[in-house]
Image 1: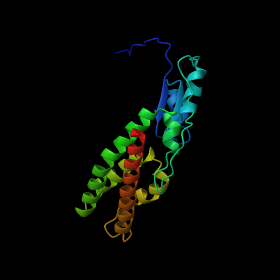
Image 2: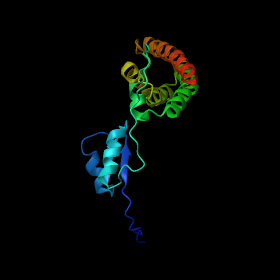
Image 3: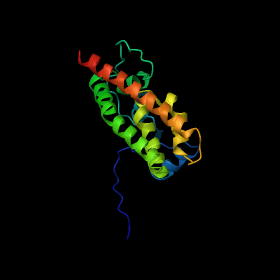
Length: 184
């Protein structure tokens, strides 16, 4: 059975979490027109789109002129670069962070308590993408890597889990403060 060819002239941009050497070539060889790895940089995405002749007739580059509040844990630089100054987007992802992180943390702690290392590994991995938007990955990545490779005899596992919990609890408080300030 032959695969039908659509003969469309719509560019396809592959977006993947794989930033390994050869990944771009692999995507292009499979019919993609371009490749972009996560986390997505808005300016790079627009540059790629512009390269296909899709000019910026509807795109308006917005620079966030607003003061970026400083927090001890959360770093809004990445969120602001992704949002392009769209405050409703920033509010939405902050709200999602405050709603989802408590459940993620609870599942992580329960998995450790139950010695369910498969779930512990999954939850630690899931947290990496959940905390990235709030700029927490530099603080947590090494700790989450440890939790992703648990070992029942690993003496640092409990300490690492406590550190992750403390950072997340404090980050949640900062995110709640941010939500309150966004509403004003």
